[in-house]
Length: 441
Image (tube, rainbow, N blue to C red; front, side, top):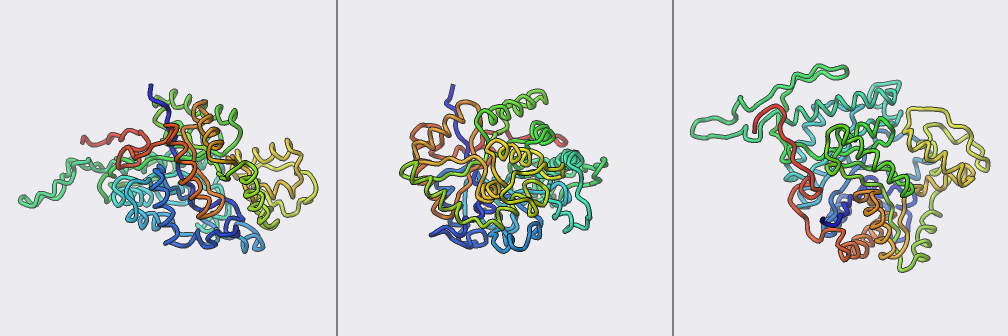
């Protein structure tokens, strides 16, 4: 049986989730909004044979107090499709994954954008399906109240059916472009969706040929019960939050088990926890780098990040007291509960918890390349993951450390590729190309 292989994505919007990243010595302060820098970084990642360059998205700026906002490197960011389309022309093999909201966008727009990106890139697009839990985003789309959590997921499931149905509007051979007969496309190879559902009404067909990959790769990031079920039914890659290895193994087994019950092959979905990587010549040096970076997080930033994660305004909490009871909200339920549990377990004050959240509170690998490779291999072989969505602490040094020092160690062990398997994201991830469910190809 072939040895299991890691799949590696790069979380690149924002370029670092660490709020102090832009202040680190030697870092590019404008890395999040500088196209030449981003182009250089994606080329470096492609040289390191990363599977994909992943762009998250946010649809609101005024989602934190101005004292925190003025310290944030995320206040100005490129629109994902515009940037990825430009980066497609600067690369050849690395996947290009963007977030597309099912809450505040129209399925026809989403289907058209991803189909276009897939054609422009030669089959390297991926759609990260999100339900957008940020209530401030609702105010930018004419809504006073945010859609309730369960309703968002019901709409997302229908949204997925519509988008994939639109991608199947044309057979792969629907466009003969017969110059002699003057026949550009064959109407018998076209399907009109004519969807009328609980949340959506879309006629179709899509005004673009079927994507190179059939469908762009479907990615999902929710870890709530609703999110896991959506992933089991639809996702081909799942970005999960970092936690302990035993918790990751339970999540891995749960999603794969749900896939089997849904009639899907568990190997056709890759579970990729987010992991921040700090590389040093020793554990002590890597820890010193992390401590130095954490020291650059201002309390204004930390308490704002904590408020967003908890789904409630934490600015009035006693900074040196314990975390009070947190009411239910429409924020991400999994992230909120993880923080509540961490605060209780480690007996953290609000100030300490805010510092940790503003810095980075998720899974981190800290040490020399060999130790980091040991840990990644353990996660892979013990079925805690199929790979990782790597987050870099600061740019460009943090990214270069992973590509130049960690990747060669993974390759030496035979658990990460030395060359891409194919030209499309599906081929590199080992995913099948979906058949057109409406039109014979």
